[in-house]
Every structure is written in C-alpha cells, then in structure tokens.
Length: 391
Image 1 (cartoon, rainbow, N blue to C red):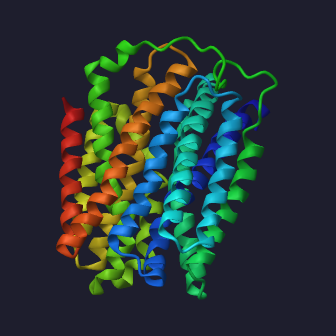
Image 2 (image 1 turned 60 degrees about the vertical axis):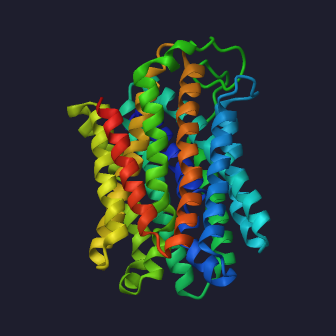
C-alpha cells in the first residue's frame, strides 16, 4: 500500500485508539465496575448516580472550555494531554473510598473525555477530509464501541479471577496509557500546524447567526434529549442485570453486547444516512434506541434484555456521529475554529442531558425501588428527539 494511502488509515486508527481510551474506558468503564463498587462500598443508587453525573458535568465543562479561542498549542497537544489526564483519573479512583473525592475525580475525568472527543475529532476529520478519505471517519468513531467492548472484557476477565473494584480501576488506567502511546504514534504532529489543526491563534470569527438557525436549534435540543435518553440505561444497565434475579446470568455479557454492537454502527448509520439523509437517520436511530431502552426496562428474559442492550449499542454512537457530522456541515465555511465551536456547543447540550439523567434515575429509583420508571421516561424523551429531527 502506498505511503499516501497508509497515512489516512493510520490517522483513523489513531482516532480509534484515542476514543477507545477516553470514551470507551475513561467515560464508560464505570458502568461495568459500578456493581462491584456498590457491593464493596454499599453505594446507594442515588450516590452511584451522583458519581455518574459528576463525570457528565465534567464533560459539559470540558466541551465549553474546548470551544475557547484562547487555548494555546495544537489540537494534538490537547487531545494527547487529555488522554494522559484520563488515565490518571481512572487510576485515582482506586485510591479512595470518599464520595466527595470520587465526584472530584470523575469531574476531572469528564473534562478530559470532552477534550479528547472535540480536539481529536476536529484534527482527524479535517486531515482525513483534506486527504480525500472522509469515509474513514467511521473508523475513528468506532473507537467508542471498541473501548466499551474492551472494558467489558477487561472487567469480566479480572473479576473472574477475583479482582476487586480497585484493581479494575487501576487496570482501566493502565490500558488508557497504552492506548495513549499508540494514538501518539499513529497521529503525528506537523512541522507547522495549518489552520485545520491549530487550537489557538486568531481564527476567523464565527457567525452567531448560524446558532439562531431553526435547524441548528432543533439539532442542539434533540442532541441534549438524546444525552438524557441514552445515559440512564448506559449507566445502570449492569446494575439492573445484577439486581434482577431472572437477568443475573446476563450481567457478564450485557456491556459486551453494547460494545460489540456499537463497533460497526457508525459505518451502518453512515450508509443509512447516505440513502435517507442524516436528519432522518438520526430520527430513526432515536426510535430504535427508544425501543432498546424500553426493552431493558420491561424484559425479564435474558435474551430480550441483551437485545435491548444491543439496540442501545447499535444506535447511541450512530446518533452521536450523525449529530457531530451534521453539526460540522451546519458550521459552514468558518474553518477549524467554527467547526470546533459547533462541535463544542453540541457536546455541551449533550452534556446537560447526561448530567440530569443519572441524577433523575437515582431519585426515581429511591421512590419506586427500580429503574423501570426512569428507563421508560428516557425512552419517551428519545421519541421527542426523533420528532424534533423529523420536522
């Protein structure tokens, strides 16, 4: 394969490892570890939800900070530095049993995750498009599913030999460091970063009018509702499996089902979007995800419960990517700064939904004794997001 063909492929794989580390592990490894923490530390559902919400609050703050024009350095510097912070925060979870400290650590980890997503996506998509290989963006976004599947296997394997929750967090931090080294190797710097990869400097001003466009506002609102709609199941699905006697046999497989179904989802949804358009594809994915979320809430047969989890995995990264790609299109010709700002605005809306979701679920769980009611509410919210995108 000629070197000019290998370079875009290496970039896409570098993005895959970056998102696998920061999102699949740094953000989502809490889901399979949470049942072990709840048993070992006697965490209530409300406390577990607060820990998740702290991470998502950090994600929101990171998205807002990533939109700043005053950040020095390059996009590569920021996403690799944020990956290092993500590794440290995962490992630090093993060093305490204090709820306030857990909240601070997960807050910092959420900031790091948002920085990796915004800066790696800006840099890698711009370089891929410049090389005429925008089709490889699916490989970049597949990193989230790969990371989720990896974290599921890591937790299942280590817990199977008796590892406790502290060892699981340390293993997640170590894996993130390894993925960081691979990403740094595959995504090289440039002797003089162009406007496509510069994180600071004097970018052209972004037009505020595009944020007043009806299509943009509906996308931002739908993306926030999607953040709420997916996150309750994504946070508590392993706990639901452990707490339901009829579903306990599926606990070791449920997060793996989410991850494996997420891996090819970007490619599948890109093809669907090619035929019906990104906005209709976004709406269809929200409808299917609502079905999956509802299924995990009402199913008491393992195969149906796993099917619901698989529907979640098959759609949530597709919706994420479709939203980011649509946002990039709506950003217009303002260059990398405008693209980064649009991605950050959308990520911030997503972050608000994620913050509210786990807290809401924890509160409703304490009132009802189960996650069925919050899960069904999440499914209803996803239906609203779909309707917004169909207008």
